[in-house]
Length: 78
Image (tube, rainbow, N blue to C red):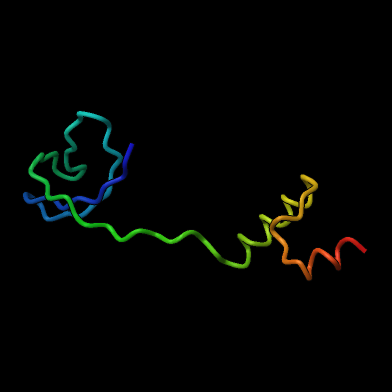
């Protein structure tokens, strides 16, 4: 199910909603079906330090070191 951004022509509210196949979305604020689909900017995958650290901890628990650089792997395998 894709997630779309909409702007309601009746009340002017902007919102996002999941759209199921064949279902017509309605405004959650006023119930109007007069909506304009908005162009959404894609969100890049997270690259924060906490996400990387979490992925590395999980990889280490699972026994593989694919999330580490070659230099880091050599230090860990000593």
